[in-house]
Amino acid sequence: MTVAEDEVAGLVLAAGGGRRLGGRPKALLEHRGRLLVDHAADVLRAAGCRRVHVVLGARARDVRARAALAGCVLVDNPDWEEGMGSSLRAGLESLAGTGARAALVSLVDQPGIGAAAVARVRAAYRDESSLASAAYDGVRGHPVLFGSAHWAGIFASAHGDRGARAYLKEHAAGLTLVECGDVAAAWDIDTEADLGHLE
Image (cartoon, rainbow, N blue to C red):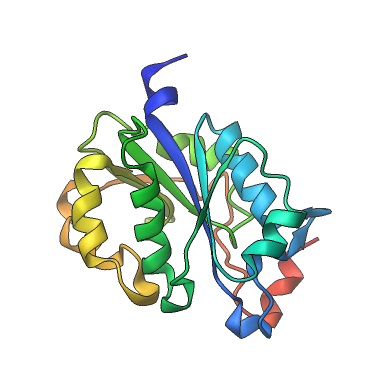
């Protein structure tokens, strides 16, 4: 076991209610016969994250009943309707005191991003000051790795649906971009039209 395996925790943001999908929570959508939330957690594990926390919100009880998330820490976000920022705060708060020195954050609605891309971003971890993001043809995307030295700043600035966008923009000079366009497709499942990506 390497130091990074023990210190980089995976964090799946899976609390959204799927407002633009007619109120269908993305965590409960299926891709290749499995729930998106199961897929997202397994990708983080396959990329080397031994600890995986999953933030739940919309229909959390149904997700807990249907998902195969044994071994994951399930984090309830009662404020999920406020947007992704509240889920990111809940997730980072849940990692405090666990020994994790970095959080590798992925979104439940991007099943085109697999373990190869996630492992590349994870490999950018050096210490608690690390800040790295996947890039697709040079454009920043997910997953994003936040060393624990950044957590307080992100916690203070993550609001609404923007998550850590403002924080990352402010700290762009220290952000390592990891190109992943050759091994992943960074589409989101946001609207009915996007459901065509699911198999």
